Length: 132
Image (cartoon, rainbow, N blue to C red; front, side, top):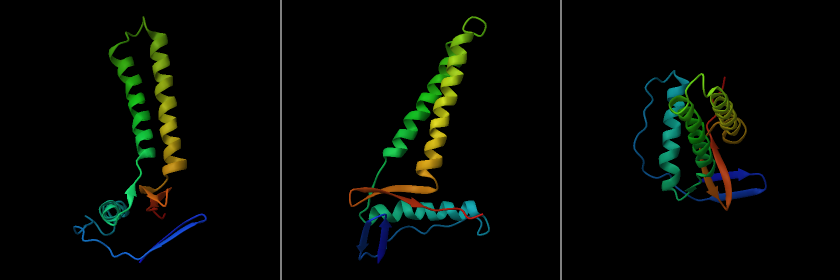
């Protein structure tokens, strides 16, 4: 049985876990290795249980990273230093602006989630927090 709760929406589903490959952690005392194994399990098991993944925020993040790289590549390969000093400064500012947007999305939207699902028409983040 699986129980999801987000705000006012509740969905109680009578489901069994699907068959997935065994996940192994390289080091049982490493939080990073354990989180990686749990994340891989969720990424394999939840779609097989019929939950639809939502890639909206991941796609937004990828597009912002592409814009960051575009600023960097333009400054590196198309601009010459003494002559195009202003353009290089604009590229650096643009890179940091879009990089900050990616960081804000990570900090306030994605947080510690390993995947995003559509449940009952709403977006639900599957969090795997790392305790201190």
